[in-house]
Length: 454
Image 1 (tube, rainbow, N blue to C red):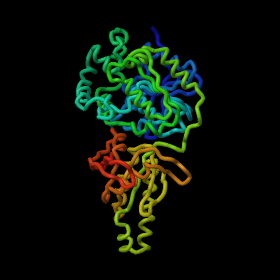
Image 2 (image 1 turned 135 degrees about the vertical axis):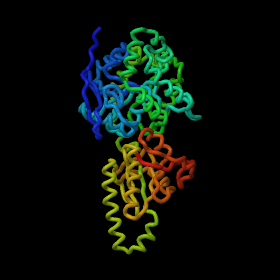
Image 3 (image 1 turned 180 degrees about the horizontal axis):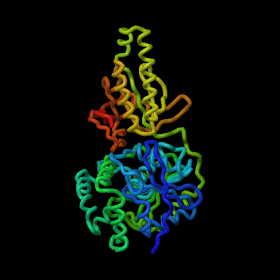
Image 4 (image 1 turned 90 degrees about the vertical axis):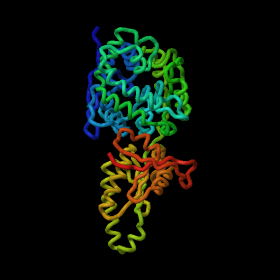
C-alpha cells in the first residue's frame, strides 16, 4: 500500500543546523512536538499516527519536525541542550512563515512545548498535551520518574535493541509506552524496527536519553500563560501517566484535564478519534491575547570583586577607562549569546536570556574576559518567570539571581539548581555548592558552581 507523505523541507537554525519539517492541511497553525525517537517519513507507516495527523490537518495547518539529531534532521557530534531544542522550533516556525501557533505535544515532547510557551509567550496561542512528562528522574516529590539504576539499564540495552533483527514485544511496549496489544501486530512491529534504526544511531539514542534524564522543566509550568488542555489515557499501566498528567494540569493556571478511553500511549498510536476531536475542539476555542509581559527567562548578575579598593589604588581616570573598556567588551559578549542587557548594578550588570545554557556560558566568558583586564567578577544565574516593563525585568527570579551571584567567589559563576536542570547536554560542568539561605528569599536553595564552560 502506497503512503502519501508530505514534502520534507528544511529550516536553518542560528548555528547552521538543518531541521527537517513537513506541513499539511490549511487553517490555524498547529505545531506537533514528538517525544524521543522520530523519523518524519517512516512514522507515516504507523496507521494510527497517520490518522491523528491527517485528522488534525482537516481543520489546521499542521507543522511537524524531526528534532536535531533525529530522523531527517542534521546528526550531531555533541549532546543537544534545551537552548538548541528551542532554537529548532523557532527556526521551523520562521521557515513556515508562522509567527504564532498552537501546539500538540506528548511525552517529553510536551515538556519541550511547555518550555517554548513559557519562554516565547507571544508565539504560542494555545496547547494540547497528551501524557506530558516534565521530568524523567524519580524523586520523592516526583514519584512517576525512573530511578538512575533503571535508566542506566535502559541505556545499556540500547545497542542490543538496535542490533536485533526483530524487537521483542516487551521492548516495543517499553519504547512506545503502549501495552494495548499493538506490539503483537506484525505490520506495526516491522514499522517499529525501521523507525528505530532510521531515527538515530545507538549513540544518539543514549545521548538523548541521558539529556532528558537530567532535565526537569517543572519550574516552567507556572509561567505558561496560554490556554492549555492536558489529556491522559484512562488506563495507564507503565508510569501512572494519569496521575502525572493531573500533576502537570494542577500547576498550569487555568489548564483543563480530560481522560481518554484506552491505556498508556494507545490513544495516540491507535489514532483515537476521541483524541483528535478533543484537540480540535479545544484549539478551536477563542483565546485571549498572550501575556507577553511575563516570560520565562534566565537572569544573570555580575559584580566586580573589590571594586572600591581597586578604584582607589588606580585613581579615578584610570579606573573609568578600565570600566569603559570592560563595559564595551561585556556588551560584545552579551550580543554573542543573545543576552538582553537590562541595567548596570553599580560595578556589574544584569542581563536576561531566552536560554539557560547561553546565560551560564556568557557568565563564564565574562569572567574570563575580566581576568584578562586584570579584574575579577562574580556571577550568578537563575531561571524563572520575570515581568517585563519599560524599566526592565522584575520579579522573584531577579532577586534570586542577584543573591546567587552574591554567594560566588572571585572569578566564579554560580547557578541555581533550576539552571542546572535545564542545561543537560550543554557541555557545562557543575560542582555541588550545597544548600544556602538567600537573603530576602524564602526557603533554602541548592546552588552549583560552574566548573567549566562548553
